[in-house]
Length: 590
Image 1 (spheres, rainbow, N blue to C red):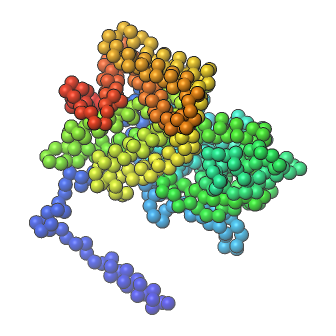
Image 2 (image 1 turned 90 degrees about the vertical axis):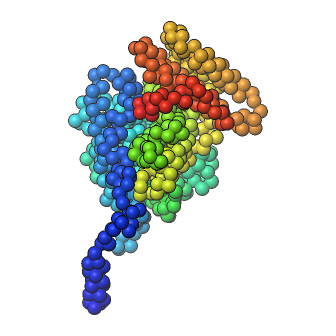
Image 3 (image 1 turned 30 degrees about the vertical axis):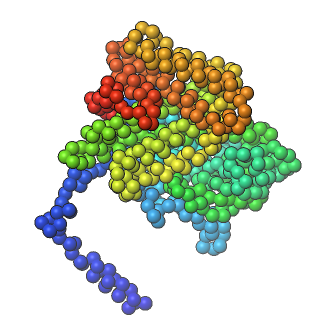
């Protein structure tokens, strides 16, 4: 053994002593420094202060008494996410660094633990310690944890991709909210410290275990059964097919024994007596994205759980509290990842040279970048407005939450793809930029919390409800208030009103439409709704600017309308916004 060790060490020293090959540029001109030699991407860019649209909306909306502190907090988090947290997340997404399942300890005792690398734990700790889900539990924060502040933090976090952080934070926020709204005082006392205490040792260790092998969206088909015990608790028997982020506490569903009713339950990792609960992790999932956090299959073998709220209203609670928050986070996840994709594409295009000029200066590239930027603006305006509706309990949220989960998650995937194409071959190299990981994370993001068709159905059902429909169209009407004083908006207003009338037809007629025909047209109708809503928001911002003799958002409105009205085979015409490089540059660099 000693001889073998010496041989190995001798070989290691021999390899270490080999000098690095010298580079003779005369013989190897292809190795000479070039335009990308010192390229660092968007390193050093603050994700918050550089996001002019988000800053604009928060400046206009946040209450004056908290605005300065919130903007400062977001600015500091923007620097943290784009700096140390980005580096830790990148390091954690390497082969050999992903979380692994540890079934047993050295003595053979079942532990069913997930072991994460130090970089992954560091990224989670940085976000958690900053108060991203629990700032209202931090004694040093002097204000309420304003909803727009909370959403802004989560949006910035997603600019590092899911990263093993964004999904757990969404589930943790959802569970904190469920406990606050539905939990008994005893449940709040026992469980909130596990997932919200600033001093706790683990971070974002909340999960959601809903999906079973028989289906995800059709939760009523769950086969896991909950058996009520004499002490009021339940023992669950069954399996869960997709268990995101196995950790300290999770929310799960099960059929109440002897009924067709689905209950919503809290299940802790450890039982009250300190023993490991009877949740058996069978294996981890080999999924294409969101790999920073583990997804597993779990079997319940008499696992102890507590019902939350009324046992018979589990599906209602699941939709109103769990899925609603998750869908909001899916939309802002798509938005955040799309923003990062655009930033990477722009930074590269401004640096990369081809045929004697920067790639960004080619009209065809400028056209693509401006299209990406305007579509990102549209998504940002829509998501921000949906946050306001949720915060204000405006029932227009019933339409927007499912609609944006679908449309903005699709937007995120589209933006990642477009950004990769800007980088060309470098765009598909995993250690050149974050873009390949963003592409995979976006596909995962699209699949979470309901298929596109399910979300489209939920959107149109909400729009058909008279009270919701009236409020939603009232909001659309409000966006054009004050437009009459600006003749330059006449064409845009006319087009916007035509689209509103068409949308009213969809809302009115879809209920009586042949079911097969309706299902085939759900997504085009939701796409039309999203585009109409975003036009209204561009219009509102343009009116605001024009009242100050500023035509910035009027330019953006005109460019966005060109995108929506241009057919696939239609050329850019002289006089269009997209035919003028100076106009495109104003859009790209705003």
